[in-house]
Length: 280
Image (cartoon, rainbow, N blue to C red; front, side, top):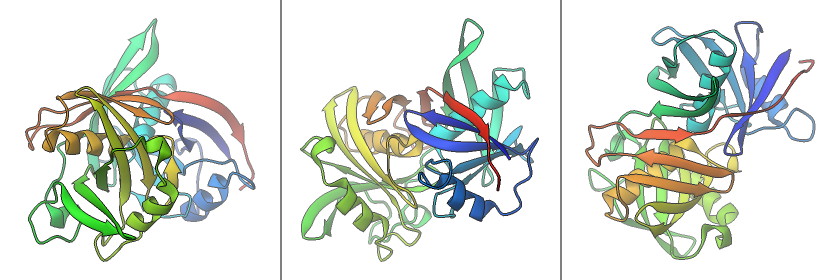
C-alpha cells in the first residue's frame, strides 16, 4: 500500500490516496500504521476519497482506531495533496469530513502551494451540542476543579469538542500530560471526551498554546484546537479578531469576527515529509 507522510505545523498524519488504494480495515490500519515503533508513525491516518457533498472527502482516524470528526491541519494537507496530484485545477474547492463541508482557498507562490486557508465554519457554542455538561446554555470562563487545581474553561466545538483553559504560566512549563489526560477522559463533564487546550495570551494579537488531543495525546499542533482557542479568547475579551497562535510545531493565523454566526478562518502551511509503501 502506498502512502504519503505530511504535516501541518508538526501535526503529522499518514495520507492514503483512496483513488489509487483500497483499505479494507480502516480501524486496524490506523492502529498499525500510526505506531511510531512498528508502523510508519503519525498522529493518525487520513484517507482521501471522492466526496458526496463536496469535491473530496477526508476520513480521519486517531492512533487508537477511533474516528475523528475534523482536523484543521490535516484538511490543509489534503487540500495541497489533491491540488498537487491535479485532481483539481481550481485553487478553490471543498472537502468534507463526517458530513461537514469546509471551503478551501489555496495561496500560491511561483505556482506552488504556499499556504492553505480554510473556512472552518461558525463555532458551536451551545453546551449540549459540543457536548459538555453544564447548568448554563454555554460554558464561557466557567470554573472547573481538576485534581485539586482550579481552571477556568471555555468550551467550543469546531466540529469536534474543545475545552480551552487560559493559564498564567508558559504552556511549555505546564504539566500537559497529566492534566490533559484528566480533561480528555472526564466523561462526567465531556460525554464524548474532549480535546484540551492550555494557552497563554501574549498580547492582543498573539497566543501561545499546547494541546492534548482526544484519542492521541499531545500533538505539536491542532488546527481545530487553535480555532477554538482564538474563539475562546475573543469571547473572553482577551484578543483582537485576527490572531497568530504559536504552537510547538509552528504558527497558525486565525481570524473571527466575534459574531457567532460567522465563520472562523484558519491559514497555515501544509508540508510533505516523505512517500513510501508498506505491506498491510
